[in-house]
Image (spheres, rainbow, N blue to C red):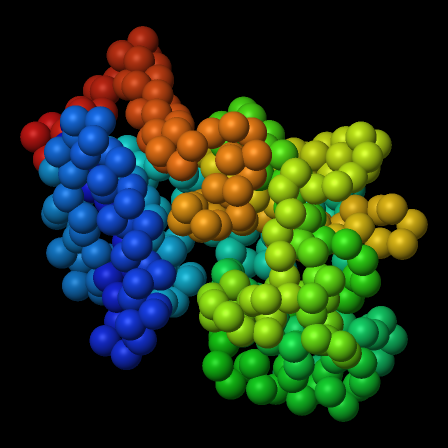
Length: 340
């Protein structure tokens, strides 16, 4: 098959470390697919849309694009464009990425289904109701990968809350304020219909006085204090009862947003043992040292096995769509859209 590995086309102001964080998994996955005999090309996405003509000539796109020029919300436009053009690609569909990347919308969906979400608000005019519970965490409402989240994102006073909302609003279009849940942090991953082993973040080595959160530094600045202080443990050391509560809650959230391909649901468990949904992450990072890869390894998969399972899920989905279109008497999607 002709396969495109699609990724954020790299902004000119990115550091060498930022470029490496994007390109390393691109190279690894391209190599894994090439070893399977596929004709693989790497394509970076930029605003000029030249990437679209290239992917239209492919039989399958392995979608690693998490934005354009580092702006996460543009990921939704990339998936929507490929879906509209009838191009098969890995991971979740456009509707799922749109819902999950707008945290206020996602929380509304979750709450309407009776799923547990910490109290939240999208402030208008930098104002938050005086009875909003503290401590609270303030973060961008349409970003992922912990963008905009640092230790001072958790606030304990009204003055801190107003200051943090105003500061983040200068950089991001919209922010969300959410009640801070003090407790253990877990993640549940999905690949197709499979639920991966539950993972936990061990905050035991965080500096004294630090908030137990996954900041941007913890995720992306290797060797930082937050990175050293946040160690993922998989499988999580939990009993069967808690494991069932976590996986059941996560699966309900993933199904609600029509999750497909692969994803991850992040949760906190409070002192009463109640799970609270923090994030639903479609197409999470699948670098070989990322959380989803660790979950897959705990299940006994090698990294190439994880990559190929994700690829095969997309290929099978494309084949089913072609079969359904044929039975319905409608034109089936060509294996190569450029020649249709």
